[in-house]
Structure formats: structure tokens, C-alpha cells
Amino acid sequence: MDLARHIDISRPFRPPGRLADVRGKVRRKHLLYGRVRPAASHPQFLVPPSIDPLSEKNRDLAPVEIEAVRAEYAWTPPPLLVQISRFDRFKDPVGVVAAYRMVRKVLPVQLVLAGGGATDDPEGKAVLEEVMEAAGNDPDIHVLLLPQDSTRR
Image (cartoon, rainbow, N blue to C red):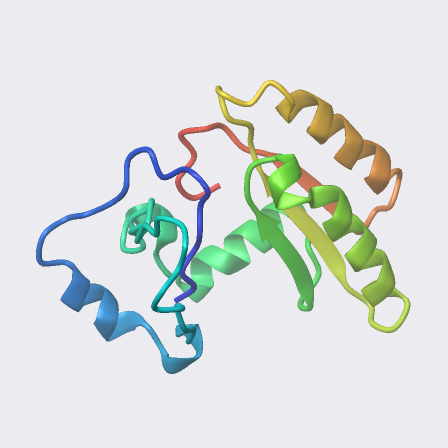
């Protein structure tokens, strides 16, 4: 299970009693260790996750579901490089295309950029246009514009 991060902290996810469920699914590799200086000169805040890592949208997919999506979009077997996020400058999808091009020099891969826009992001359309321009006519770059309420595709 991969835990996602999100920059919106306006409505943090805080259901009571579900932390134990998350702890059972988090593997050691997901943990980050750090240290906070005890005498910081500025206010500090602990920001809880802004998403529900156990929601339908963030669940593991069964192999049959994965193969159905591969067949629908005619993606070849692995490896795939995948970014699932809004088309937003903070997520740097154009940088992901550049990274794909570097990897492509040494490994035959395909890139999937799947996401959508946010209603509160006036730059979303421009970012998507930049992504499409960066992708060019590369048949191994797949840009999927998903609806905001999309939970699986």
C-alpha cells in the first residue's frame, strides 16, 4: 500500500479509531524519521493526513483489475512509470516527462500521467497543455484526464 500526500490541509482526515487499521497496513519502508529542534523560534504545527488512505480510491487493485485497465489502454507489460495526481505545477508533471525521457535512454518504459484538475486551480488547463506539448507525439506517453469524482479510473 502506498500512502499519498496532499498539499490541501483545509479538511484533514481524522476518523476516530482508524489509526490502528492504518498501522496494520503500513510497512516499515513507509516510515520517515526526523528530528525537530526543541527550541524553534517559529510556531510549529502537526498536520494530520488530508486524505483517507483506506478509502476506495486508495485501495490495492486486484490483478484482474490491473490487467483490464492495461488491455483497455493497450499498455504493454511492465515497466510503466506512473504519476497519478492533479495536473498542477506543485506536482511537476512536465518534470516527470523529462525524467521519463532520461529513463527511456536506458530502459524501454512507458509513461502514464493520470489525473485531473482542481476547481480551485486556475492554472490547471495551462499545465495540462504544457504536459501535452512536452509529451509530443511519443506513443509511449499516455496522458489520461480523469474526472474529479473518479475513484478507480
